[in-house]
Length: 588
Image (tube, rainbow, N blue to C red):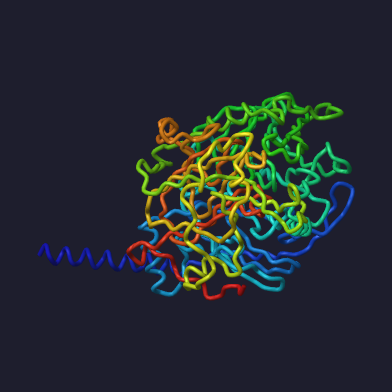
């Protein structure tokens, strides 16, 4: 009798599971259509055509809920090759994968986090979408919640091809803070009077420094402090007493920035699509590639107040300031000029950077747990440098007639002619080598004023590092003063979020510095700022099989070769292995 009852329950469970799976398989996946095209825009007293998505600059905002899936169909009507990178972190969950894998048996082709085919970096996970061609990206959201962003990932096209991704809590859940009255995406960007693709092409051909941007922007507008820009200045309309969520994204090409609103205080509640312990502050510091969720209460005398972003001196590249206006709704006498934020740190305020970044801790609550690797299987010590390569007859535009070349562990990355993912998946030889070094070729005083000659010239190659599936990985990023060109470096890893467990100035000491690691509530992020002449340590679990790019998010450094890629091997089962490629891939 008990056996019959058990069999009936098992049969009922099996039938219910099939109904559930079939309903999921048949569920319509939302899709949107984007057209890449040249659109005329006027900024800084002159007009030019820029590459846009659907004619918008910044591009359209994607609104999704936690766990959603989305198809984005791209049609390239522009004149350049393009790919799109989606910044959501990817995580691996057995239950979710198991259900979707059953759907796959019904040939509905639902994609998983273990599929890097839609990640987007040019010649890393796909060949570019050529003019006149199409490509469809499938995006799956898993545990991320908050603000992320998307951007082009080919040459410098991301200067104008980018936009926010807003991930709301899943239905039936809410924020771990009081729901705001309203929200505003705040996209910090760069504006060049010239064609950015021609600018980088010319710089790479000559081997010298790239032109700096002509303005920084807030939501595509330079603001009052630039010529011919006052009428278009972006305005944030607020009601007295209400709290607003500012979703701040740094899409600037080559600058880390401070950001503040005159007289107003912030509560920072999230970074890179993950919640943090609330931070009370009157400014933030944000690097290219990073996002931050900020609560701001409109509790000052109704008036007009400047919102401003200013470059940080550690970048030594562009010290201009962009502004928007926070404008209170109501009857009052508007000032002749908005008040500028006196709380915006100075260009050279290193202490302001350190003080802010050291306060960022993961929320690490029951509802939003973290899983920091306590033990490490694979350790890497990676130096970050800007050096140079000699040119025949000293004919290039870099130092002493050389060509500028950035590197990781003294290896300057060379972009392949076939994307790494296809080469790995199809076992195409001669495209890359698996000998990216785990440690620098030489150990010395990395932050000294004088450097040994043998570290000034990097080697070149398309080198990757192979990681075992599910291994725990620690990377120590070490900044260097090669060519006396030390800068902050926002290092970004595709395919994962990682835990920022420690950082400091000077040379990393592997005996004393790990004692200060935060292994309790480190922030879970995808871009970490490595301090000028300092170090930063991250940890993550390599549980996402595929090929994943890692690079500096200062665009000129990435263009010079401050990049590498990881290959995360398949696990022991089909459910822990990389999925098959989509039917239609763009040819190289």
